[in-house]
Image 1 (cartoon, helix red, strand yellow):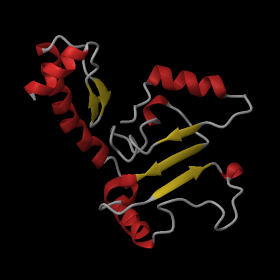
Image 2 (cartoon, rainbow, N blue to C red; image 1 turned 180 degrees about the vertical axis):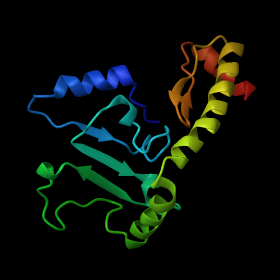
Image 3 (cartoon, rainbow, N blue to C red; image 1 turned 90 degrees about the horizontal axis):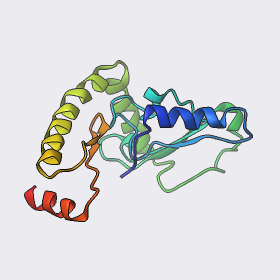
Image 4 (tube, one colour; image 1 turned 90 degrees about the vertical axis):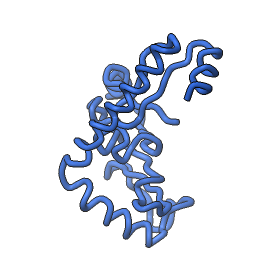
Length: 160
């Protein structure tokens, strides 16, 4: 599972690279497309990447698709030079467009992620307290329990 950028940590990474001869690439494959609330998991941290990798659910309706978003100054590719496993699959382009139109034209889906995400957080908090674990970590619908003791992980799995 990928990890969400915490505001303080994510911002410090973005600030550290400003002015440096570097390119900030964000992997949005695991946590992007609304899983943490906003479309991009790094938005809340104020991170402005140079390139963003997206895949999986970006295709909408279960169709495979991958794409790379980049600032115009880095877009030096000629047609056909930049390809990958799920690029150029026309049905995925159609379903991705169709999925983006009703779900991302306003903040409705982002807001709808909050309530079930809060239910997941509460349930994991109960599990954590029952097994003496640290509080769950995450945002939106992407939550997890930190297991600081292998025995605790086994006990929580058996109880589930």
